[in-house]
Image (cartoon, rainbow, N blue to C red; front, side, top):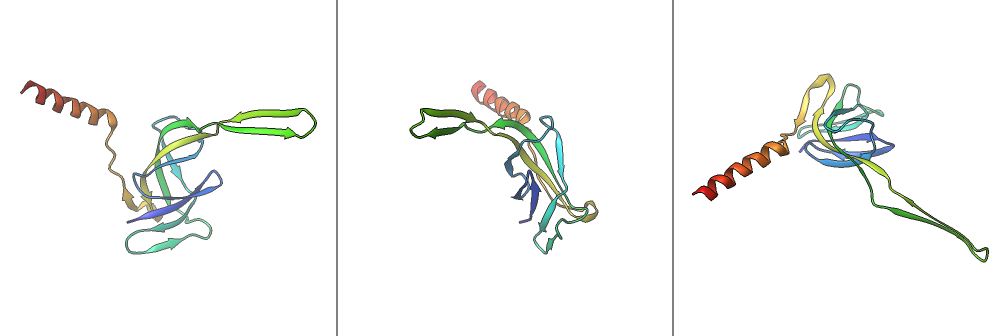
Length: 135
């Protein structure tokens, strides 16, 4: 099984193809392809390559699925005996991505995901259901 370790938003993620992640919000449109060039480690079934700090020429491609907000976190400050309190809420923004390709130096494809679009899969399921109900 091949995987890569990438860095984005000040955090490191271990990714493999067709894996869905929530990362720090990216400024991109839904459905757009994103390339991560900060690849720290590549591993395929035969060998492992470690960057110093990054692997030059290696990239990981992902598809942006959605921009979402996390659950509300309450921030409460109280000063005792002062009748002072402050209550605040915060919802962190995330981007949901799906990893599509892992590319090594020179653009060699290490692993690629087989993506089935939801609309096509739903249409095919409806056709099957209609055929079964007609019989």
